[in-house]
Length: 106
Image 1 (cartoon, rainbow, N blue to C red):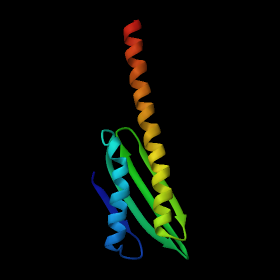
Image 2: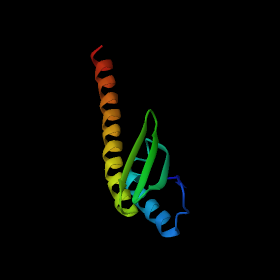
Image 3: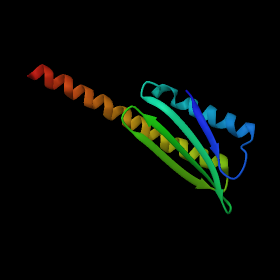
Image 4: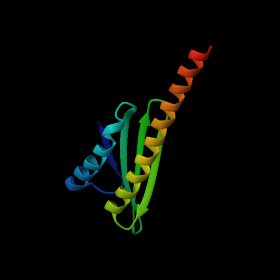
């Protein structure tokens, strides 16, 4: 999976990039619906902000988390992102099942 990493206000160290790519591998089970992904890092005062944008076939999911530690922000955002992508995939499966049933009944 291809992931674009953008930083605002500072340059991301290599260990941060590797950490994000490792975490994004958790989404590899959803690769059939994920088209593109982007991670944006920034900071405001003492808060570290992480924003993930994942483009699916029919939807764009944006997740934004902030905390005092960048790695904690990444973990919180990834949990939320994983939950939302799984929900989108389930909805897609349910929609396909209803179409098949409707076609069989008619």
